[in-house]
Length: 466
Image 1 (cartoon, one colour):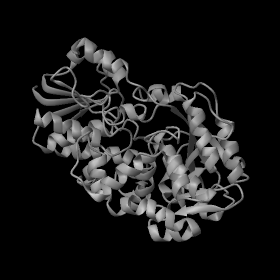
Image 2 (spheres, rainbow, N blue to C red; image 1 turned 180 degrees about the vertical axis):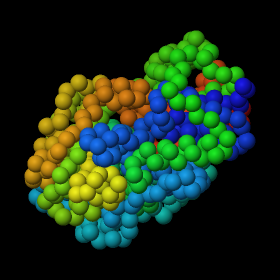
Image 3 (cartoon, rainbow, N blue to C red; image 1 turned 60 degrees about the vertical axis):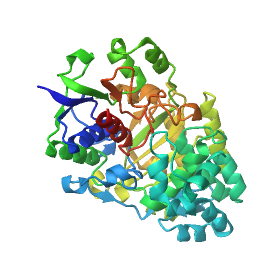
Image 4 (tube, rainbow, N blue to C red; image 1 turned 30 degrees about the vertical axis):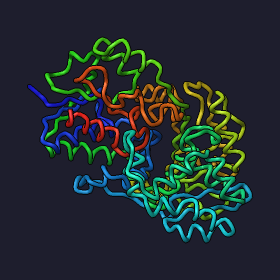
């Protein structure tokens, strides 16, 4: 059978590429090595029967606030978003906490004397969100000038640590901003970390940091159902080990990182392009734990129970934590990102029990066990937490890669976010390769990691143009 395009990999970017082509009237098929679709956007009963856990990606600020996913009728295919009472709370060991509300004004009020500085720093990007994301989260290009893009470009020249010190005075406000910046998985004094901090902070006010009811798998299911409704095909349990195994197609799009592409199609690529892919840098990893809990986490500050996501760490602790990871070590006080979805979605666990997960950044491929380190850190903010644990599922970098080969060394972002490969990744060709028939559409292409489908969307746009 002749296809216009075949996609390898049924992660969110592979499915997004297929949907984009199918909407344009093209005949497409997706081949997936595992027994289901979703890649890093999947859910499993990892601990006890009836306890639903998200394997990798879980909270999706960009899936509801960026142009491509907003254009898809996914609610018609069973997707329902859960919005926690608060997008994020950042507690401190003294029992205090800073809460981020959807309302920028309310958040500024809660920051007291730092409210004005926070507003001046973030408001332009909340107000100009649609323009900002349409331009910044696109392949490298020269955008039409606008005030919001000028402000973003100017402030992005500073690191997250530099922006925090320049605009915010208190430990609490600086720690809050540093936590957002740490999602870059860069040292917070590095160029590029400031841009991530601004985007992540603004996204909390714009999107509310929601997650799918029933687990991240529901988002992947909706994408797959929509693709099939458009006439696209999905073939599971079919590992492609050579491009010659694929059916006849005008174009092949690979939801794969450079390492997998080289193994799969190296002979189909030029020597120069293979050399360029071999130089691609992967980023640090994560060490993640999922828990089945007897009861909700006993936070010292009750406001924490209203948040879907929490960041744990003081300003200097977070900055030091990310510096240590970039140097190939894990500090004594690693920055912890935690989510507690069952407080807002009763389908995640049988009553009266609950689920939660947390992770820290670690060096790529790190083999050390950080279970006690993470649980001890949470205990500092929620005394008695460990007594609530019924069962845990531990995800080392090696286990993450075993589950999903695209998570090389436990890197969940598809590659390092260092500025030298942030805008044009994995090479200056971005989605195209040296083979005019072969394209890349994974998180190793712009705009990088995150659940937004834009890597697949823009790759498919190149296919349509070509």
